[in-house]
Image 1: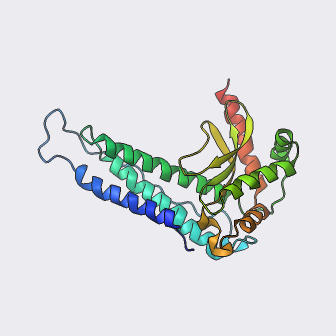
Image 2: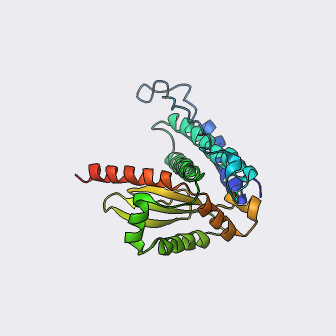
Image 3: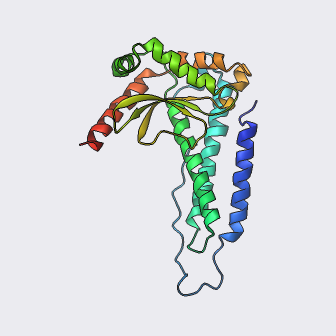
Length: 246
């Protein structure tokens, strides 16, 4: 499959339809009343996709063609759509129908989470797959062994195989717990948690290389993990939790 799955295409078309619909309904009233007149809408800053933090051709078991398509189409597409939704939201007024505002906010959440999770996903790739440091000790405490955690994490990933979603190791800020999260959509992430390690299980992340054999992709993903980056996020999460829970 190419850069986008059928689900992605339908989502993008739906978003396009929503934006097309709102483009007429959100136009300023040519004869506004004195109590509804407003100044120019504040234009939100344009978000720009981040480049891959590693050389696309250096991954093992994940082709340059796949990772480039994933980055340039799925991730960059989410950023582009988020910019478009934010522009539409900037044009809303108190007269805008609630269902339009709610629909735009829902799309904003989905695209923002897609952007954030994709950036975390690409950010924890490009390494040699060798785990160590504080995160290795914390995982061992939480799951009894690194092997037990890896087995549990891969099981969550495989539960999404053939579908779409994310497998996430995160740090729950209120409790300091490490958790494995199942995210079936861009809008399902654990509240008050910081993502430490993110694995994309949407079909666009592996189908070009492995077809329906998602398990082979999961193994390749672990081979390319950058645990230094995971440790960096872990240290930041501890600091954030310390500051939040004072």
